[in-house]
Image (cartoon, rainbow, N blue to C red; front, side):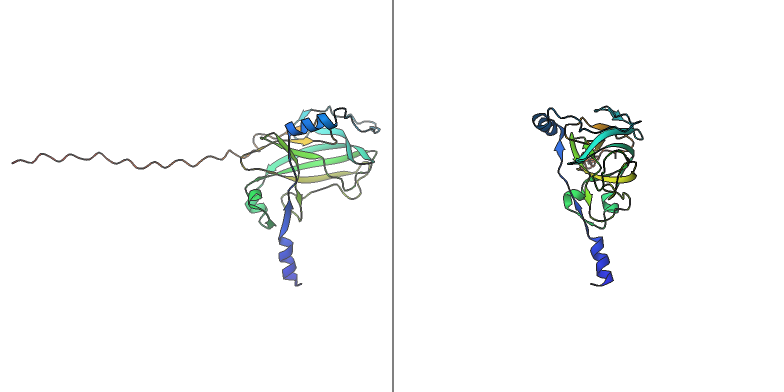
Length: 229
């Protein structure tokens, strides 16, 4: 295959959507399946204080939680959401092969820093941050096949042991008509998430319906002067 053809193929990257879940559904599932869920057992490193579940934070405030990335993969992480920005589907995703529904959504870019406080190894684990929109639905970041220049990021590095730190950017697609309300840290099933509230200045203005066009009013018909016989 020629170099030109390879470049064209590379531009036709895909965007893989992941499932979403309403908070009400999630709460009922967690109640039935993990009613007695508790934090996975791990030694919290000295000097680290775990953040109270259910806390609401501002951008730039860190949260430390126990993260269960899989069987035998448990560690304490400190996550800080530092920036939330709104992107453009038309400009930023011009080289991505997307469906019509995806093109009508609003992309949000969430920049975060993750530090593994220890003691576990978290290589290639997903960053446990979820979007929560105005329809009371939470959902994970999308998985990109290819690089998105305004928001380069993804899972943690292949080797991400104690004291490792990584800055990343995650992409969340919000359906047309909805807005991103918060970013939630959900490190294991049954955890009451820690939230970073999206500032009002970040949210795009609501879409206004075009003004209805009214037919132009006609001037009153003039009366002809009476004719004299």
